[in-house]
Amino acid sequence: MRATVSLVLVSALWICAFFVQPGLARDLPLTLVALTSPVRPGGNASVTVQTDPRTQCMLLVHYKTRAAEANLALPKRADKAGRVSWTWRIAPNAVPGAWPVIVHCHDEFKGSVEQRRLDLSLTVG
Image (cartoon, rainbow, N blue to C red; front, side, top):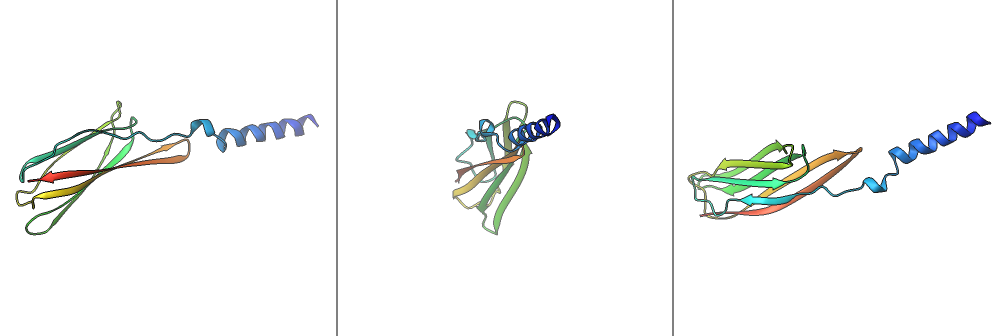
């Protein structure tokens, strides 16, 4: 009888510890720190964001040039302080205008995946 009660108690604690964790639910922080905009064609653009330490992030940039479209996908991991920075060169023949910049970060936390996205605009001109 004691072994059965102990087994049931241990099973219940295991279920609570791994499946029922309302106190651990969280939103992944993601805030803009800096964005160079406007940027001249041929110049360097940069963006810096703040998130949780060691979070994996991806920068997605899209703009047009006179010859084609430019698409960048640049992965990077946040440092120990939670900062992530990217710098890239805008093509010299970039078409002036406002172009989308997306920062997408995701992190695994206690078995769940937290994701956040920042939609920004980069002005070339």
